[in-house]
Length: 206
Image (tube, rainbow, N blue to C red):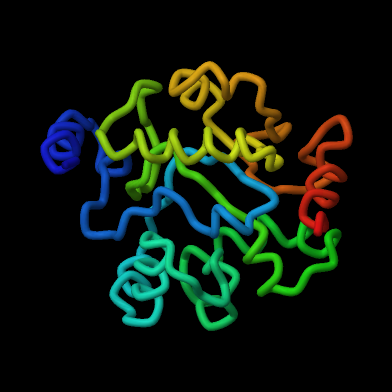
């Protein structure tokens, strides 16, 4: 359903860095929406040379597809699976969540069950450069999923793209954000008003 819009979008880009990589598997979300305690709202997945190898790897590819289908796996947030530490996905997420995981005192498998990220845009690009209005039809699912998480009273934190998420639905205007969205590290130093402690508490909520 997105093919025509993505093709038109790529044709309008002035630089290769902001074009969508249509050879990578889309990642509208990572994690289990039912077991997650903390939900992170992000902009879109990055694109690196390492992704080409990772998305072609049968085991990693299978984990991505199981995630999209909502099928059970030991590490729902598969970036935390030790077997995939070599992937670009793991190399991006692991350092950005390390302080939070350590503070919560959770092992990889438990942390992977309690963390969910929802991307505003599901396709990979080296740089975002995305307009605040939706680009393709499938984004409506991401917006729906994020709203469902609000209704289920999970703790939601916006990592990036305040304008994009607020444009998607005014309900996201009240979501708290990281202090420096460009940094992306979920740490005490990158949060205000006890937000980091609230995230730790949410992750440890039975």
